[in-house]
Image (cartoon, rainbow, N blue to C red; front, side, top):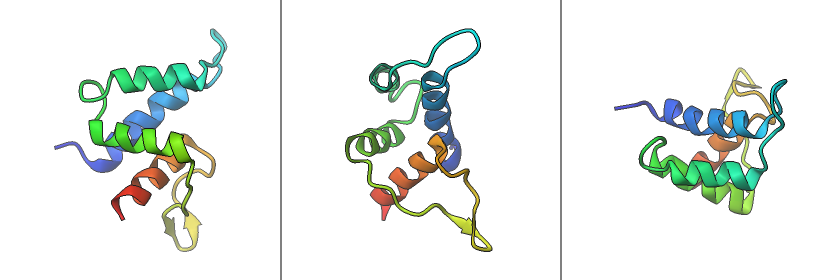
Length: 92
């Protein structure tokens, strides 16, 4: 069984990699990256996490990030923060 955070990271990292510019290529449009992630659901990425990702993209409802000693353990504004917020919102 793959830990939940690892499954979240897989989707968040893929989305970040596809939508970030690199020295050798421009950033991919969000719609295209979303399509790639959607097509890889249940095969490359966990289907439940992709469903959470889809919901997040749809409504952009953000909730606070997990903290330790009052400080976020996830970089603010990062794809991981958004994915964690989406999953947290849907499983509460």
